Amino acid sequence: MSCNDIQVQENAAGGTLISFKYVSEVLEHGSERDVTVYLPKANHTSKNLAVQVYTDGMRDCEPAVLEKLVAEKAVPPIVTIGVKPGFMPSLIPDRTARRIRSIEYDSLGPRYANFIIHELIPTIEKQILPNGTTLSASCDMHSICGSSSGGICSWNACWERNDFFRRCLINSPTFSSFRGGEELLAYMRKYETKPIRCFMTVGTDDMRNSAGDWHLEALTAKEAMEYGGYEYEFELFEGGKHGIGSTNAAVMERGLRFIWKDWKTKSVGIRHLPERVADIVTADSQWIRKSIEISIDEPATAYSPYGTYCLKDAKKKRCGTKIFLHTDNEVKCVAEVNFTISGMTVSCDKSFLYVCSTEKRFVYAFRIAEDGSLHDMYSFARLHIADNPEYIGAVSVCVDDHDRLYAATELGIQTFSWEGHCNCILPLPVTPFAVCFAFDKPSQLCVFSHSMVCYKRDVLTRAPQPDVVAKPGTPLF
Image 1 (tube, rainbow, N blue to C red):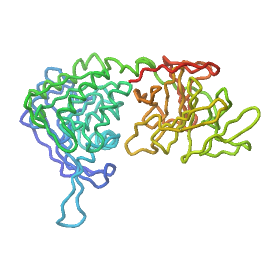
Image 2: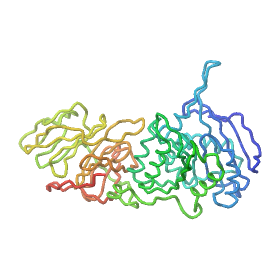
Image 3: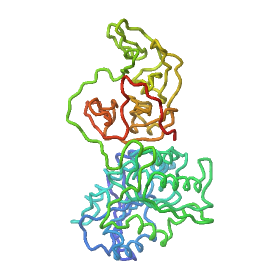
Image 4: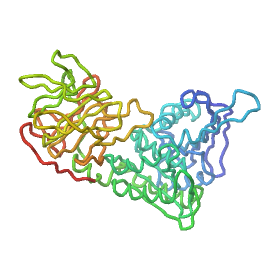
């Protein structure tokens, strides 16, 4: 990690502008990018400064806007970091370098945010900022802004690293299919709401191409933020072109005033939870780590009136592709599949067996006959998949007393209606190994990590009663 060609100058607006070239050792090793740091003259302190990151570099109008807002105390004392897109130089002389803007900005997942948080900002603190200058560690004191692909990058940074970024200003954001950006529009509606405050602009004559329609996607994002309960403000420009507002001082000022509103007295919060999330949890309930020791020898076990379904035969030999039914009288194989089963559970009306696998994107369902035999497996629930996942399916499943299915995945607990619609995702504090309702408290959901650390959360739903045949009744959407 190195800062080269460092240049310091006074800006016309009065603040200090520091420019340098940065070579990364983490984000696309060997990539280079130009970075500019601006310290407003109006800052009345050099301690615990807020941080504002601008993708695609600093805008020409930004220093003057910041000087005005800092002087008015509409935004806190702040340092702005403008980061140009990276490029990968050719190792062969006189060949064309490759720009990696789309790789950095359009990709889902936390990689770019982690680069900013763990690599670039610490380097700036150590090598660039004047002695004695410190940056705030509070997530409420960090914002990120950008246009087009830089816009989705800014939202995604708040989404993936909500423990660091909570405020964003985005112009014509690329919620398009370049690298899966359209998925974020679904996540806004399904995930438990994250504390993000967003100012978004788009034009009615914005970009349209093979990846999507930026105007329509921004409208969809606006509606998703409304449904999801986010703090947001939206400006639509009639006839506006791509990137509308990104270089306009008046629009920038309005946007920064909104995302930093009440910064001295209030933290960024949420307005409400999405409907299907609110069916399961309240906004003030949290995952609580419990100091208990538990051993789960066989998470893929399902209990039913017909016996116990598991992956072990009569000699207790495990076979991940065969389902055995254990009764008082016998053990018999009742199904065989072409994938390794990781979890299973019986429906609340005891008539279907749900089966999951880390190898498959679907949770499957079998019909259960009166003798306990299994028939007619079909694809019941389609899972959302993390970007660049360790596995594509679910590690464990359970149901509540209305037959809502809970699937433990890399993205969190995905829940499904009794007809198989995914309508809620609960983020988790750990990578899950198993999910179930607490044995001693049927209205408490439990998640276990691979090291058998247990997290519990009070929920508004309940575990099914073992001997009660309950009719499915979850809302579908």
